[in-house]
Length: 193
Image (cartoon, rainbow, N blue to C red; front, side):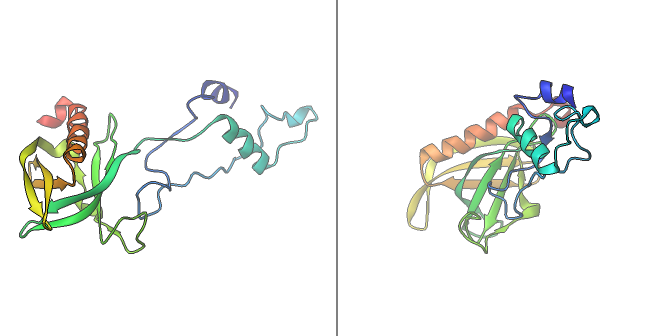
């Protein structure tokens, strides 16, 4: 316990796979609960006459010096128009979830609204785009007219499907493309076989 407290004063004692509750996630994200299995001997050596800390005091003591580190923060979120498989473009709310050494970045998306603002927004759980599956991404130099307005599009080619996604501005499109290219560059060579 003492070594953990000393070693992790800056970086926390554990890494959490998932997103915090305030991120785009209709399932509510991950809530970290503090439930110490036993009283802290380091902070209150009870066998030396010091009364043990109650669990709430022990948790307060821990959270003062440590914070959870979430492994999959949301790097970008916003509206994109996604080409349908059989017809037109559909406006979807996307969140780019950062990957790490052992897990690909993901482009998750919701239908029927922004999950931060619309209670009925539904995440397409099994439809997320796995960024390491993208073989090629290119910004399309011409705009596409969608809903009567010009949109800036890019194409992501996966081994099983090609997506055309369009943003409201060229800058937005460029930010999405840049995130994808960066995440693709972190792919391990053995994944390319």
